[in-house]
Length: 492
Image (cartoon, rainbow, N blue to C red):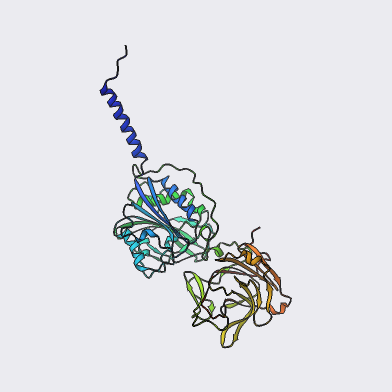
């Protein structure tokens, strides 16, 4: 005869079951609370949010709040306006690209959210270039390095492990070739920073630190300049290393490079990305687009513009300047040029390929690129130009300055390709033939019937004569002489 279970026995079973459920819930509950601040210029942030939050959560017991705001370099993330903006977080990952923000008090308030509280920070790629317009070094001291520029992008980088005994670098090979890359140039390493890895710079001909740790104030920091391209960030080696960097910054990484007990993630799994959005936020911008254009192997492209100053150029500094890696051609009503003026390369060019981006920021008067001519004095203006002009982005067409006037009128293709923002352009000038591509579309192909007028001359950036305020922006400006006879940016 079966006996009925006693009340005490049933209570014991219930307690065991409840304890098991609580244990399972505790195990599933993330141990760390992270904040990801992202957005701004030049990268595929919607997908990078997925890569960082999902990829790190698979390796670290962490849950996330995400602040993803803005599509340009002047974005001021709203969370930083709070007095105690980092309160409640165990770690903050900075993946923002806000290089145009110049408010010193705002930037130093961000830094205090780490240095005064001890909340650790992780810095990824373009966060190194963020807030570089502000006249303070506090952001860079927190990061551990100063960087304001990068080498040509689109290259796989040869990364060397410089600290194989450090827990963060356990499991990192002696050498790693990234899937893709854009190497940042390190101008200064602050005293408390410790290198973990370097990558060789083809342009600078020297090793550039690309992974490191730092301590500043009460905060521990892990930083990496690697991370422009999704394919690099999706690489298991990148995710594994950044995860160990995060754990180290939080004091939860063991000496063997493994998470402290209870701080492992949910386990590795595929991360499904969305198609990259079209336009500036989903693909390289700033000087990045030009630097990512793949020139033929037979060509030797050079940057006409160093993104810092007007070295190699001549023109009126009252009209032409550099801001945040962009050449700005600008006048006010009071000093508007009576004659079109130009910023001119000091070197002459004859047969060439030029890729660049241009934007009319103020006024709809056209601008353009002057070629195949010479510096010309007109009505007291010493920096005008006589030669061919490739016009954009209104009045698209070609003009022969101070000779034949209009020589080619747009047939509608250029107006159709114009995106009314940063237009990506390629000029191919060979012999007497000029071809123009705009945003991947061939919009003009014209041969001058007077080849004797096609001479070697400086490249000129036009600020048109006007009576109203105007502003024109140029960036990229990468040129190859004696190019192959084909456009390289036109979509098939």
